[in-house]
Length: 266
Image (cartoon, rainbow, N blue to C red):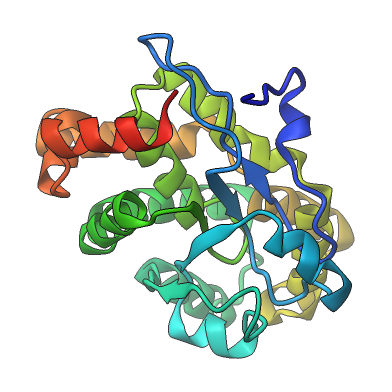
């Protein structure tokens, strides 16, 4: 029997050491069909998943783990090796403006403001969607051809993963309102908030910020806002006319979308 989640926060899986780990099951598309539970998952960095939780992870029966992090990120925070993580596939995305942003403010004498970070996140989300279409094409092909459960993740499980999740839900016929609600669920991840605070406190930018400014930046960097995804969709539509054309450019026209729906919907 397919599980439904009455409370959106119930989608979070309690795998010790994981962050922002969620099941897509139960979402209903415009035709009334439902995404199967236990087939499609998303999360953040898995490097801190504890050995005691490996069996819990194995019980999810995941056949492919798609890692969207950069080469550098996989080296500094490697996914545990061997069982049950041996099915990892690396499809790296590294938004160039993130490096430019850090360089800009490390060289500047001015203290970065909250609006600077928010504008940065808006630009990065757009960049992820438009500049890495080759990766998302491979990502969707991997999902389509994976026989069992499919997990995809990046570092926080909200930006690169957020775009990936939005594309999958759109392909499955889920309404944009629900796609946005799922995207915004990252704001409910307590572990993500705590880990982002620690990371920024250790970062060159965060070390010198007043406590109040740091907390506002932590909230922005650990969360997502409607404008991030809405603006990315708007920019896609500017370039490709609509999301259907964009999906076709990814190699997912009507026939492959129908196959994806047959695979994941009940």
